[in-house]
Image 1 (cartoon, rainbow, N blue to C red):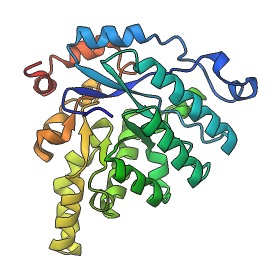
Image 2 (image 1 turned 90 degrees about the vertical axis):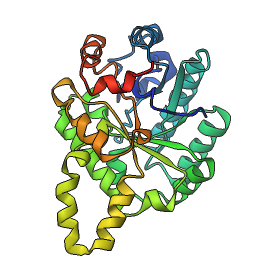
Image 3 (image 1 turned 60 degrees about the horizontal axis):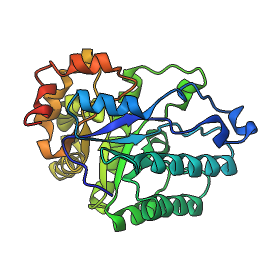
Image 4 (image 1 turned 90 degrees about the horizontal axis):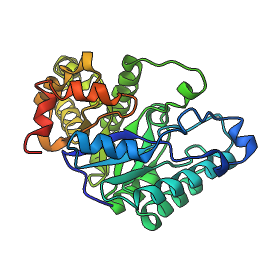
Length: 288
């Protein structure tokens, strides 16, 4: 696993699957609308924007699949992703795990992805966290490896005709961050690096307001939640109209807790070029 720092684009999506990778029955249940993605487009995007490195992720978990199908899809996705990224020093990848398929299956997939395929961490869907799913054994394995966890909403609903706005994604990430804080998960597993996508949702903006509300539960409680939230890491993936939210993020946590997030290709290359002109966005390219 490589070090992820400020100039690593952690919010960069890629679909490594091709139709021949999976069975016909499985292809009938999931969409392949992004199989035209080419790794050359990702490399061009990095080079044209002077981004040193990116970690690819495939944030589609297809919870409607049965356990065996979910395990199979995760295995081939991680295998293909690792094959692609091993060819380029600029690329890394987050593993997908067969959540809800069984604790043993999750741990086995984690071990293979991080220990054998040497992937950079895992992608954890907000939907799992927000359902109060118990991850004790998984967190222990992540802690032992000092692993990185990229917290991102599942977008397979988009592949099956659903529509979710940035506000919807931001709300999911906000709930996930509060779950990690209120359950003191970031404290219990201090060596796990939790990176919140979409800049942590609305937490940086609302936190000062929430602190006053939390005082009703006592100053000690407020201090612990404040401390837990500030242990998390945050990417910079805001749409252009929301980009001023970066100012709240910069005020909320130290720069060492922030890492680049482009949301490519869902933020197209042209939009990323426009974002780079924003005064807050430019902070993340100083010295690059």
